[in-house]
Image (cartoon, rainbow, N blue to C red; front, side, top):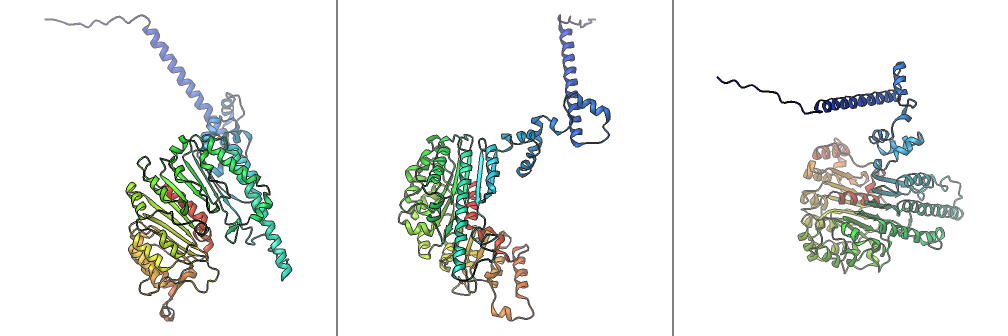
Length: 558
């Protein structure tokens, strides 16, 4: 019988010592971590101000060597805590003390800034403070200049009724209006300079977007050079703004999104030449919308566009988007374009020719290059004959927005859109800002075939329909709601645009307004009512701003 015994091997010399030392080190680390947690707990209790902590809490707080309270928190902890706050609350918290202000403007807390500024002198010190703190490191900057109603009489010096009637009163009112014009322009230029100066050396900037509400800086549709020459007689500020913009482009190292819309001569035909080839090759979105450019010049040429090989989204004036540009975008070395926003303005159409615009074959080539290409068109006061030239059958039109002050859209244009773009159209906005609301134009020549009803019937993807300034018959509105149902997410029609048949008004047993609301709500599958206050919707009151914001989201939704 064999018996096997296992003899333990002798432990190497020093092993017991090393194991003991490791246990001691691990125990010390645990004690140190526990001590730190106790200190942090005492700090937080002091911050909350809980009563009854007693001498034990004071003794623990004394271990830190600082007084109890929020000021004793480490900067890293303050940054982490306030990272959960929205931006407006961070700004309020930064006014508490200098230590918090230093922590709250840590670059990681402000990767993006979206600022909407009133063109008012009161905004300048606030803007200077914010841009001084964040302008040198912010990665995404979006600024909108929203001018207040300086010229509408709301709260202005010409509203109190102190002026005499007649010629003398008109002269006083014109003088007051001129003074407010000068104030608006002067403030506008100062705010633009403040933004550009603060980011001139920012090399981390990835998205840069500027919007200027120049509709307030216009008089009867065109910029008044008389007021501009009084504010900037030698043109030094305008030149300084243009030079700063080019300097920002030349200093950029990570810029992928550049958008400038309706600004006051900030972009010139030579601005994009400041971008290096490396940055131009990585640019993903480019938006240059400005109808104040002289007739023979464009903000970007087809040769310049060849550098932007990775461009996925583009927004331009329609007259600047030529057939040669369409050919460049279909080249094999360019990535497929997915979003194209085009602004058709009557000022551009008057001074520039439509002969160089892409034909139907160019649009077919663009659609073959990118099957996901979608187009957004905004038309300001365009005549019907010009729209017939612009609307080529092969355009993958997803959104169209008509805004008119003088020229009205015809029913034939609406019928053409519903026939050609029934597979793509999702947004249709029709606005006529007429002064006389006694008689709105009626799109339907034949009461049995209303173009808006046919639009809702043919365009199966229609999700937004907004109408103001055109007659919409109540029974047609009910038909639109029933045709599209819950797929029509937004149906915005102003109350003054809705009209009723005489038979509906003659029926004493049924309230026509109540019946309309009930039937449309039933068709849409959600509560509906007509727009009572036109000022509540920016699509009706601020078409420039609405188009610019929609274009931004349209381009980001790739």
